[in-house]
Length: 343
Image 1 (cartoon, rainbow, N blue to C red):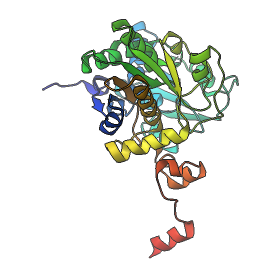
Image 2 (tube, one colour; image 1 turned 180 degrees about the vertical axis):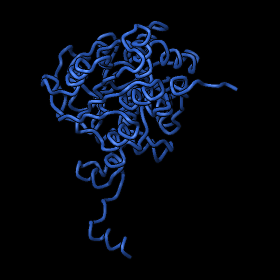
Image 3 (cartoon, rainbow, N blue to C red; image 1 turned 30 degrees about the horizontal axis):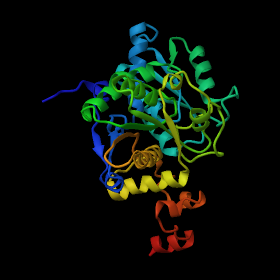
Image 4 (spheres, helix red, strand yellow; image 1 turned 60 degrees about the vertical axis):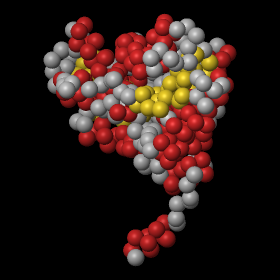
């Protein structure tokens, strides 16, 4: 029997799941790294643990100190868990356009939540910049800085990449992942390329992000105007992404991401968020480009429960024009629903 030590000891070593329906239709092995099974529910638990470990080792985070971060949600959730386990105060700055469930969960975990208006990165009121200033104002605080703290990419180089290599027995032809901070893509791509330079690493990018054009043409130029996905797609090159070794990029529209989210649920029994949808959609495209007999690994980033009011809400999907992509019938009119409930 293996005994794990607390929250931090439970992070990582997630299973690699064969996605049967997608594997069958491509004649490839489509494998998903089940990061939603981390104890805090997402791939971001790895960065959260590593950043706090590093700050403790360097002496910048002392007992009773404070951890401040700007996050779209999942890193904040991971940090709140680690802070609870180690006795730190946790302050989370979050843009107000994220799912309500993320706000509720962070508050339930005891973190101090500071919502701010969602604005472009160039604005001084951007959540990442507010987090940096907040950390400077609090005695004994550190700013986790997940976007430009390369401890993020390093932990994926040291853990996620080796896990994938071991789980596939080194038989992997491509790795596909979206990017927010760039930590997962950078760390895993560097590790796999070091093992075998011919492994293809591919960025999956949503509408509104500038990374698709950057990878293809070297120019930061947005493709589309915005996306329903949360925590991925960005308009700048972070310090983490700058270290990534990326061969190609795939642009995935929201309709396709939503279709794959619901296929994962209905065909694989996996209840996951939109980032998993975009990742699997891109992995299937890469499989078709490579042809039968190849092994493509992607990341199943987080579970679907944090998106119940949006991604799994018929009314919200209908408002976004995505109901058909989900394969769902229109929500009944409010009056009809009231009559059914009363009856």
